[in-house]
Image 1 (cartoon, one colour):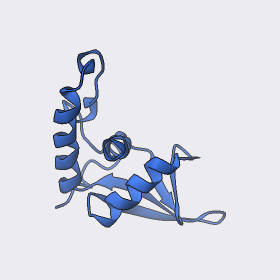
Image 2 (image 1 turned 180 degrees about the horizontal axis):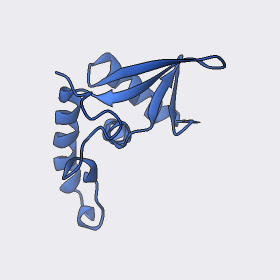
Image 3 (image 1 turned 90 degrees about the vertical axis):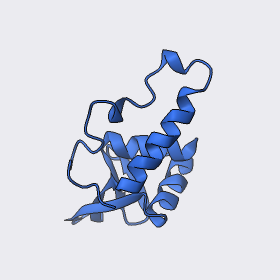
Image 4 (image 1 turned 120 degrees about the horizontal axis):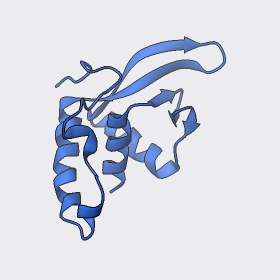
Length: 110
């Protein structure tokens, strides 16, 4: 479940890595999400793009899904949709009609 949460957050945009910290909209993400993001980065499901130097923070790199990450997210969404009550939420809204990486659009790679 943590992997799905992390992939969804990256797909929604706004996740970045600063040094060894993961941020979402300039706030540190919970440890369970940070751990999942670190694993996804190591596994090639998430990549860091557009590093920008920040004099106060160091290099800030935006997180984006790779094609493998987008495929994994889609597979996890199918599992989530089978859970009781899933019909009352929209667990996979980013990948139904929209670009999975709203910031970069073309950042998906294999």
